Amino acid sequence: MGLQWDDVDCQTGSLQVRRQVASVGGRLTVQEAKTGQGSRVLGLDAELVDLLARHRAAQEGRPGPLTVAGRQVPRGRRVFPALTGGLMPPLNFVQRHFRPLESRAGLPQGLRHTFATLAAPGGVPMHVTARQLGHSTTRMTAEVYSHVLPEMQREVVRRVRAVVERNDTQKHNTQDHS
Image (tube, rainbow, N blue to C red; front, side, top):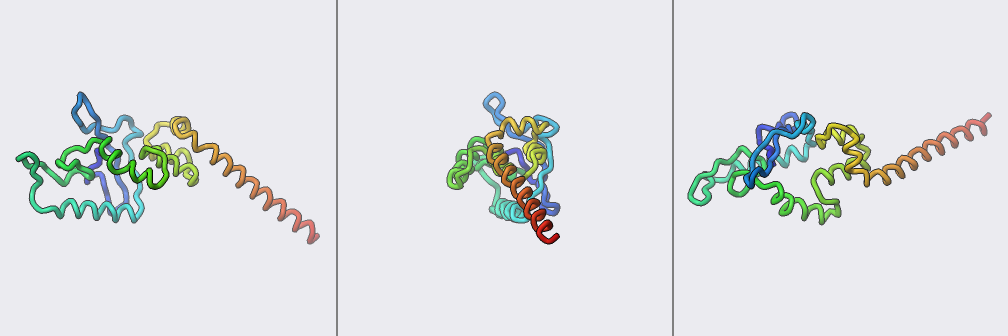
């Protein structure tokens, strides 16, 4: 929720994760990422770049200043602002927007959890997933998302068996032609 438009580069298809929104003493505040690994550059695919470009155009296309409770609220800086133009509480976004999507898609709950759950069986190396999530080590990623590993282990067995069977078939074919 700390993402601002100057973090998004549609030309290179990337975004920088530099900030996070946190509740401190009951007030929302923008803070720097917790760790060095928390601050990172993420690649975006063409479809997501297009979606972000359309989202920005829609934000900029709203007429006039935003007025809430009789005062003008600045707009245009935040990628995902609250209706007031200020900081959107992360929990609001997750509960109102993301959880219904996860539920319809049959995915586990949590943005990061969903990403890691889909990345592992998709063949994304653990060190890449750790970097994307901002983890300092792959150990942390493996411990938090270890429930995905049994299916990955079965997949490794299937792949190794396929290689062995392919080599065995090639060996028999070579012997038959001798």
